[in-house]
Length: 392
Image 1 (tube, rainbow, N blue to C red):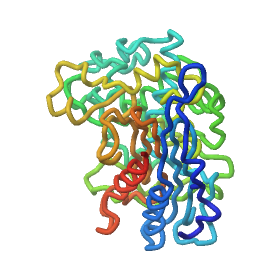
Image 2 (cartoon, rainbow, N blue to C red):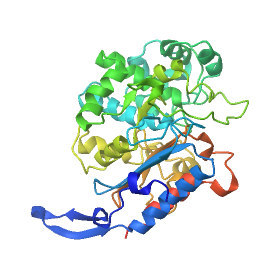
Image 3 (spheres, rainbow, N blue to C red):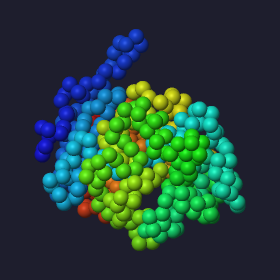
Image 4 (cartoon, rainbow, N blue to C red):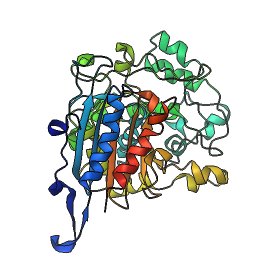
């Protein structure tokens, strides 16, 4: 396996993790198969060797302990002299969403707001028509009726519009459906969560997240917006193959404008190690700022509480507060309670409360999600399966 001696930590002793019992005793032990984890990494190395994935980083944790850390390929596509290392920050796209939601829920825990309150109580210009019915809960669960990407998204980004202009555009754009009646993925709902955090806290969102989340968790390589060292340090992403009629934009991700923009729905830079820490904390395995009550609410099936959703939505499009539940990309061998998210830049993370296993995969190849070569079709799910199958 290329680079395994330098990059991989797969020693058998790291794959035996005690489960603490009462009084600090060990009730049992959960083991993982280091050969199985090596096979998982080999899937990624093959994708790099074939020229499909330029670069990647991955981390796997079990019971709060890191059992796998590996990286490979190039930070800059086509440049073999720019190797990915353990501290290379990737643009993680929509993996940003549950992290922003976690930060916002710290304010709810402080008593700053309740999720049943209307959005217009905090953003008065968000009003008229069905917008008056949108609650904060709808923003966290993708049931608001807001667009995912604005109809004018391409125009706004081409003009390098500031984030304030996106907020104004959301406030004057009609909803797609009545709040609480459908599940429809909505990046613009996360934009409004970020706006509410700023108005309530009096801090810029990137400063707030750094203070309330990243510093307490020692996520030293995570930042909303351009990371320290700029594009000379960050992984560069390939363009995304969005359909022509899509409002999504996937060809400006390496520009200074977009990297600095700090989109609450997709602008975080982070590393596999940092995101592994966040997942372990969300599972309650490591200390940090999120209380047990907040963590429990975030990963619970919140969309099951909405009586107007269709049976299809409640069965398939399940959401916690910011977390997707049971996505196909998490693989077949995780429990139904597994939570996580995927990102358009080619990123994925998930955690299984039943096995206390978590997995992070960061790449700079958006085509892992669509239009991939047949030999690498569904690669994130295949990688997840191989990792999950290694837990014994």
